[in-house]
Length: 162
Image (cartoon, rainbow, N blue to C red; front, side):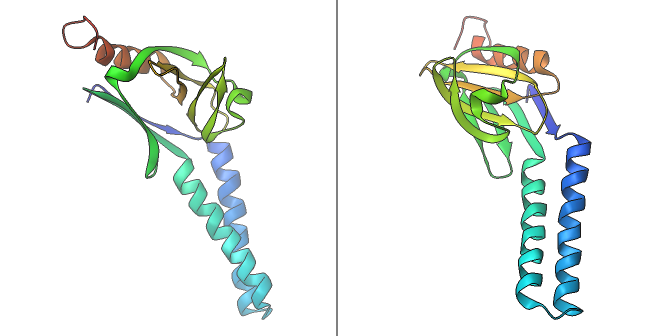
C-alpha cells in the first residue's frame, strides 16, 4: 500500500449530529415507555437511529492508493479507479457547488461528469481526471501526499506511465 488515510468529518459537525441522534433516541424511548405514545415514539426512535447510522457511514472516508488503483470508500460504497484509467491528479480546493454538497455525490465540474467523495465541511483534496473524461474529487487532509502517491501508480514502476 502506497498511501492510506482515514478522512474524518470535522469534530464539531460529528458532535452536533451525534447529540441530535442521541436526543431523538432518548426522546423516542421516553415517548414509548413513559408517555405511551407509540407512533410518535417509534418515529423519533427511528429518526435517531437513522441519523446515527448515517453518521457512522459518512463521517469517515477511507482513501487508499495501492499498486494498481485508487480507492475511496464510505462504508461499503465507493469509487475504485484503476491506474490505467487515470489521466492526471492534482491537489485542489473542493468546490461544493460543482457536486451539490458533501458525501457521495455525482455532478459536473468544468463540463466533466464525475463523483465526489467528501466529508462535510472539509475543502482540501484532489481532483482525479480519467481518460474517459471523468472528473472525480476525493477529500484528503494531506492532498499533496495523496496526489504524489496516485501519480506514482499512474507513472508505473519504471516511471514511463501506465
